[in-house]
Image 1 (cartoon, rainbow, N blue to C red):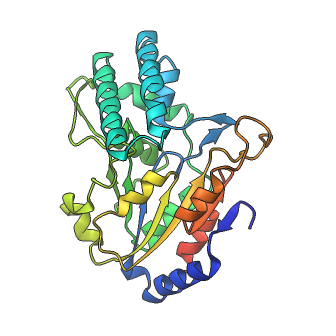
Image 2 (image 1 turned 135 degrees about the vertical axis):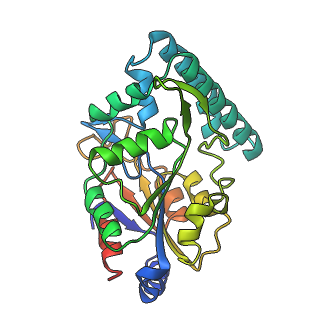
Image 3 (image 1 turned 120 degrees about the vertical axis):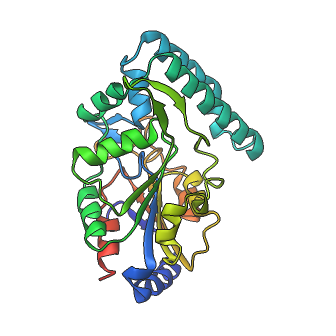
Length: 295
């Protein structure tokens, strides 16, 4: 299984056996969106999120891009500095997201900007994702997308609608704007979800969604960062199997290992945190085959 690493095969098989034994009716999927369901690289170019495409593509104004990059340069090093106490990093991330959302609104963000990005295919689902969505829908397995995406609910919904995959079993928890009648963003709904407070985004706070999964206590969690592990916080699960997509610091297919995208220094950390690690921006086939084993 190229690009598939099982951290502890014995422990993995035990978890898998328990989940499969209890079957589809006791199972749901909890996933991040950017770089998890979507590719981290498109045409060998790093495309981390819809908001980064918005920032770097001059969709709004050069002044917005300049200020957005200044915020990135200020806060991104804090995000990645594990020597800074978590409480301080969380506070910094909240400031970053709040300032960026305010900047977006003042810069004239419109729904049409998001629609244009989605139409241009600069963000793409991983190969196998459509079959994954189809199978979950066919078997009525709930798929909860918990995302800190800056253009959140609107961009995720548009991506799914574009490919006719916005099924009723898919539920989105993400940042969401309030729009005026002309499609201008005028406010961001609270609370703000960022990369370090997913542990505070408790599923019980979303009763319509929670009611659909509260008795489905076997969970497949998908993510691309340590912060995604916190998505399960507060949920009383029986069995949890975690699959992590390691996209950075392991060269994607077609990119030399000695490039700036190469190296494997993050692999051991991912192996410690996830039951399965999928490297090199690979497809969803392994995840799809796992859920297919449920029936």
